[in-house]
Amino acid sequence: MGFKHLIIVFALAAAIPTGGQTKFVFSPQWMAQAQFAGYYVAKEKGFYDEEGLDVEIRHPFATQTLEDRVRSGGSQAYSMFLSEAMELVDKGVPVVNILQTSMNSSMVIVSRYGADPLGLHNAKVITWRAGFGQVPMCMASREHLDYKWITASSSLNLFVAGAVDATLATSYNEYYQLLQTGLVTPGKGIYRFSEHGYNIQEDGVYMTAAAYKKDRDSAERFVRASRRGWEWAAEHLDETLEIVMKYVKEFRIPTNRILQQLMLEEVLRLQLDPDSGEREFRLRRDMVSQASSLMLEGGILKDEVTVEKLLP
Image: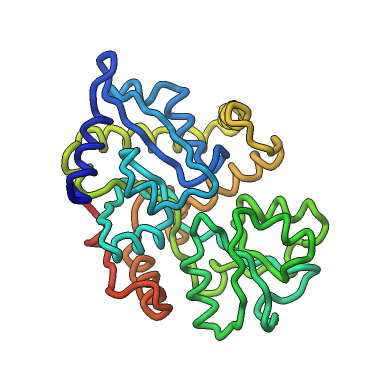
């Protein structure tokens, strides 16, 4: 049985009605945290129920790659970075964007004790085992940086121990954790991709083309409720944080309320379009084009991936 047939089988199994509702499994790209607050809100406030969906939010293991999860077909929809989706399409795994939440890059490179990340030579720099490193690696190649990329499940321990010179981080997560170590000072030793011509969208929700074609109605209902969840979250920060902490505790995530509050505020800021200042929930053609050119140049893509290839 081919890949497309397997996807259809799994999609059909996931779509069996449960108690008058349609089962829909959504898999975020990481463990429970405020990065996914809008989906938690949509579930807890009954927005999915109102759309006739029984949504299960299924978090992955830290060491499980996105490609493995998509190929296994265990979920109907997945959150992933734009660059990850483009790489999957280029590999012959057709995925389509049904909802775009991120409108800006969260990527930063953080070095120890304020050293300029672009001034480091032959530096050991952490990237994540789970993925997300496509744009940073291509940027480093374009900027002629001779980084030695070290793959790890978590960037923090090696950085704190002094085993590496710098690490990739997101502005909503690892960056704040590193500030707490005292080894990093705000404004020093921080390279923000969005400020140096590499402002490329990240988080979006994708389905395989086959799964979307088979159950477009459920996908559209999921999108409506999820957008509503994010919009509600932006207007009710305190209650949203309570909902996030419920999920964090349920999944036994080692974090704290302050970190999750900072993450929530930053994730919501990154959702605002840099031109309009609005929460637009759309792929930007210019950012897709920029990402494609960068990844082609960096050897990650073999062929151009356009907006048309990513939309249903």
